[in-house]
Image (cartoon, rainbow, N blue to C red; front, side, top):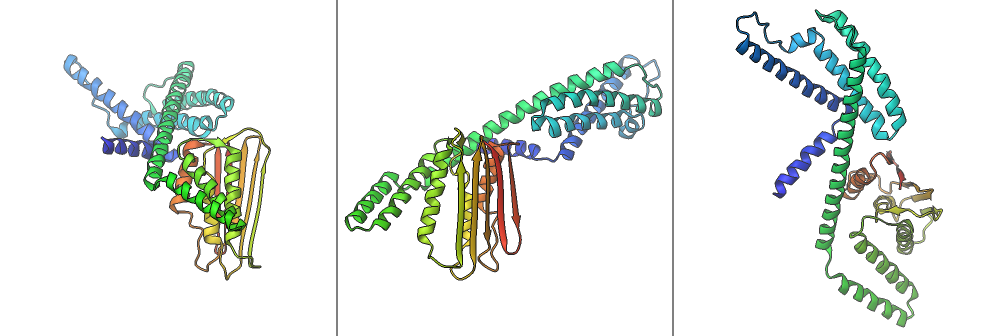
Length: 353
């Protein structure tokens, strides 16, 4: 059962990931198959019930191109796919409605043009019916596609969340014992007046608690994510030696407007910068800027590559999973731009929370 579900998800994901041109051609091909099946039924019906009359041969693929049928299908499906994928999914509804009216008129004109030049029996009085056919079909197709994609994304989000929970449970080795141990170490550090060590243990305990609880919720307050990032930066500053060649600059601004964010959404990019951007012997620099205003998040993080052969590792598991989370949680509401050259690596992320 699990393998069948996985295969079904793979097939659906394959179709959704097709490019605009591939989906258009698939759409057109399906209609061509429908036309051919209708031709076959019509030919069979005439053969059975009108054998005494002269019956035209069954049209083949190229004949349907010559009489203009398939050209009309290609143009028709192109307009429908363009309206859905390039306009509707961007949530510009009024532009979508206006352009559908325009596309309907264009399709009707194209039909009459093809009919006049390629068909033996030109159709010249079907402008309004064709116009309405286009609007009705486009509306139904767009609605069905949107409902289907929304349901798929919802199911995929639930699946990814359940997988994350399962993976998290597998990786936990009695968290209560872990936190009790940290608390004991924290108390010991205070008794020995090791305030710096106590601070590290306290930050680590807070971060681990956030990581463990974050796997069980879809969203958390933005302030919680910010505090986690600040604790992470604090631990990194404590861990790294104070040297002239290591420079870390961070700026985080939050306007306090209520907003939610998936836990640990940003940390993979920050962790990646420290992993590949810090070297004890070479010039190292990390610049982090996070701005959250009016429900919109903008993050820029750049680092120098610490090793001569170092890379930003954009294909790492953590970053791949983060890309997938962004696509599932914020379809058409985020932009991720990664710039990389031989000496530096930069991530720019925009999210509408």
